[in-house]
Image 1: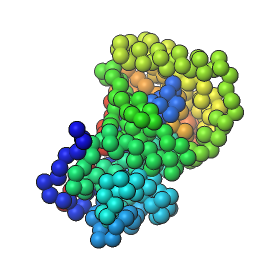
Image 2: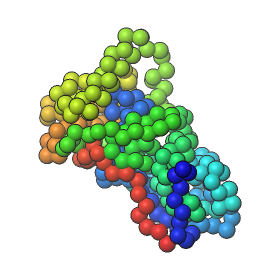
Image 3: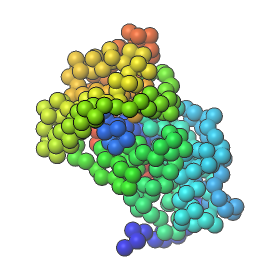
Image 4: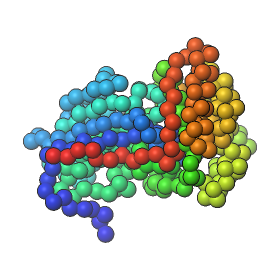
Length: 318
């Protein structure tokens, strides 16, 4: 089976929205991620008479992004999609950024995914989400320099996912599990956050992190929150990145004191996430984390979301 579905009639325009995401999830560097309800990027794709991709407008929280499709996550993802599926199709993109730049909330991935989902709706034979994943990876690589799927995977499919180089698998989420995600008014470029990881790691550090990852998988499938709390910790990447985020140690400590099952850096930072047993506790935890940032002179915005967050979706067609 091709996995395609035929459109009843060609569309002239489609608008799609993709959510923010938490990547790495403490134990799963470049592997685990979950979507976040609330902030997201919106992209409108319109058919054009001229083959190829053009970025005609960028609005919202960030406007000084490259207009050259090859240097823009959304543009490059669509370029790759059209090259594979319909090289003669022309598409004009309008990007509305709802996710701050270099926030650790997957903004580059959200743009790529929203652009793909919108453009896919214009194809005579649209692809299913799993078939869009390789094009999303290509778009993400423009921003981060690496084709990792822990942002584009959850943005595309929703919920908590394991995203490898070839596949995305959704993972079970215990009922009621919520995240508090606090975004400080800082920017931390993904490439800089990855640079501190270049020095080699001791084998023992890798084994320890692997044991935490395996236990978190077991906890999710067995619905064991105590096991989850014992192992949702990053002993590999977080220690090297913590100093890049003012007040991080205090913010993490505040989350744990407020009842978090675990807390760590969201993606490459500077946002910080924590998992809680329910929405009410997550709300209180987020406020506590915000106050901890404030104690270090950093303004921030908290949000609360189910860990089983939303997927990208087509919002409007014509």
